[in-house]
Length: 321
Image (tube, rainbow, N blue to C red; front, side):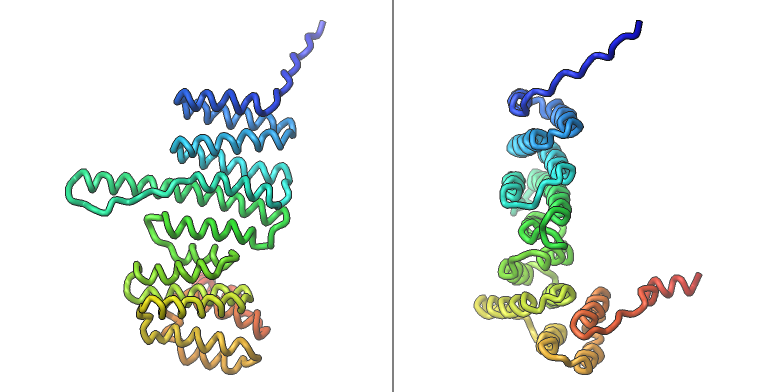
């Protein structure tokens, strides 16, 4: 006589699990709760009860972050964003608001200003370590959320608001400043005014000679995406802020090149564009990525077919082989 396989117990409403797991958290068992959040939410996903799985993961991410369990909170936040994809959740204001609520709970770590003794050094080291953990966790979450937004209704480069959130958090919280990455997300965002303020703020923090590179990089990134409007707006805002704060941008050849470039792109002037690249070659070559960006700009604005992608560094490698 064959034995029947036991039937799986029906899953209860998600709220029952939310309350049970919050009690585990309140008892201080953060790691135990983390494993339960992951396993229980997975059961709802398997049963295709996505709304309830999302409710459990959202609650878990928020309560772990509120309790300063950054790694646990970030892990559940990433799972939440990945479950949005599995659920084929449309890109809408309600879901964006849920993402905003999780993002708001990622802490901002104050860094000690004094290093008078060993205790001060220890506090600084600890604060920098926590800040790095926060940035890595928040970045993983927002990148997963951007990926979801690209698939389910946002512009093809992802939600502009999420890009700005990520760029601003990386700039303000990262112990290791990475302006190219910050700029990458800002130019895919929708707040060039905030980007301008951050670039001007960066001028007071960076090493000599990095300020004009950061501004030029931002303008070229906008232009490589065909966004002449925001490129001009950004340059105007930076100039206004530099003047109002009585800062010194200096007589940079690179900034001069960018100014002429913006004027050139307003009309069909490919010969002038090529002449600018030749005349300011030494300034452009200060950052290897600038020539690649200018090739993209030439294609977008003047229809110039880009060189064979095997040319350049990779082409040289193939020739050597």
